[in-house]
Image (cartoon, rainbow, N blue to C red; front, side):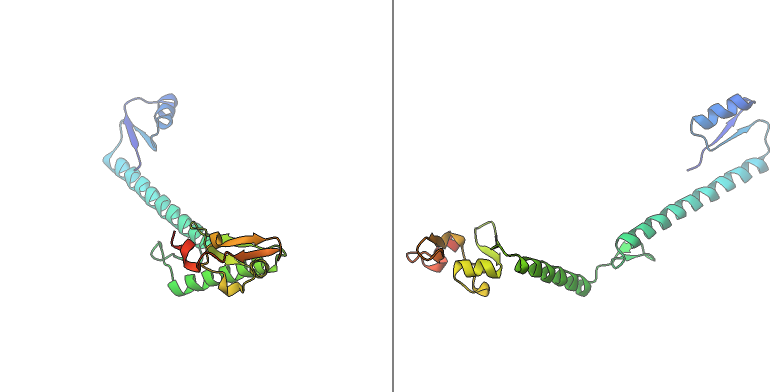
Length: 164
């Protein structure tokens, strides 16, 4: 909201003090009603223009940073579930390709020590197929020095550790 300071104090110093205090304009007596209305009208127009410019700038920044998710006409984020699902699938595939390409065994565990992901080298080390490792508890495996790989503990049924 613009502020126009009306004062009886005349002079450059008084005007400078009023503007330094945050006024948008400084009008000294005597002034006419027409002059006051013109200044109020001008400042309101400038204020609206600044507000529109700020909104446009914000919308353009959002469009640049989130081109597929931001609708400039409404100023709202629009999330396309199909597009988002495809993006997530592409990211998952890219991550799996990276993890599959590394030479080390890689296993990702969830908070219950169940295998959430194992690359081919980890599956080979566990003596299992990659598809068969997901969801199995790592608590059911032990290192066998004889076979130089992890083996499932024979005294534990597969579901015991997962239900702990």
